Image 1 (cartoon, rainbow over the protein chains, first blue to last red):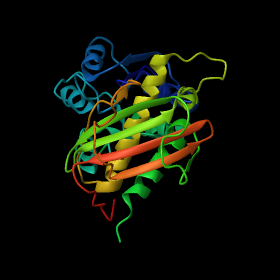
Image 2 (image 1 turned 90 degrees about the vertical axis):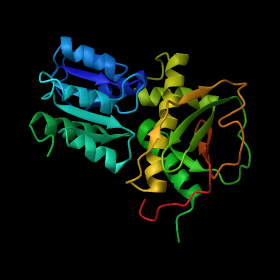
Image 3 (image 1 turned 180 degrees about the vertical axis):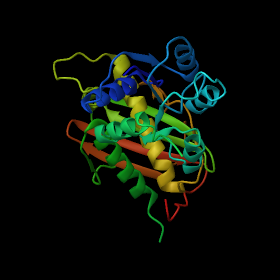
Length: 126
Length: 160
C-alpha cells in the first residue's frame, strides 16, 4: 500500500508511520509532505492508495487540500483519513461529507488499523 | 455545577501526555511555582467563540523522554534539537485541541494557530495576564506546567 502522509510536524509524520507499521498494515512506499500544497502536488504526480492528512497546517490546511481534491476528478476517489487535534464536531461533519474518515490525536494503533481497513474497504463515508 | 476549568485542563493534559507520549503525569498540588532546573516552553494561540493561548513549560530534562517516546526510539538512539522542539510544539498543540471542546463544547469551532517554542529568554506566552486555568504536573523525569489564558473568565460547557 502506497501512502502519503501530510502533516507539518515531522515528529507526527513519524508517529503516524510507526503506528501504521505497528498495526500490521501492509505499508509499502511512503511519501510525506509538510502542508496541503505540497501534498496536492505529490498526489498529482504520483497516485497513492491512501492519504493521511492533518487539518491545521501552514500554507494550505487539510480542509483546503481535501476541498481541492474534490474539485479534481483525478483525486476525488483517493481514500483519505484525517488525523488531527480538531475537536469541532461541526468541522468534522463538514469533512466527513467528502467521504473521509477522522482520527483524533492522540491515537492508538488499533484506531489507525481499524480506520485504514474501513477506508480501504470502501466504508469510508456516508 | 459546571466543572472546574483547572480540573479540565489537568485531566486533558494528563490524558494527552499518557496517550501521545506514554508519559505518566500526576497532579503536583504542593508546588506553587515552576519546578527546578532548566525549562523549555511552548505556546499556541486559538481563536473562536473564545480566543486565547495555552502555554506549556516543562523541565528540559523531560523533553528527551517525551520526544523519544513519541518517535518510538530506543534509549541509545540520538535525538536532535529540532525533533525535541517539534515534539514540544505537537504536545501543546494536541493538548489544546483536546482542551477546547472539553471546555467549550463539541459544537464550538476554533482555529488553532501554529504552536511555537519559546526562547529561554523570551518574556513568555502570553506577555502578561493571569491564567484562567492552571495545571501543575509531576513527571517521572521532571515536571510540566500549563496555563490557559483567555480574554475573559471561562464558562465551562456542561456537556463538553
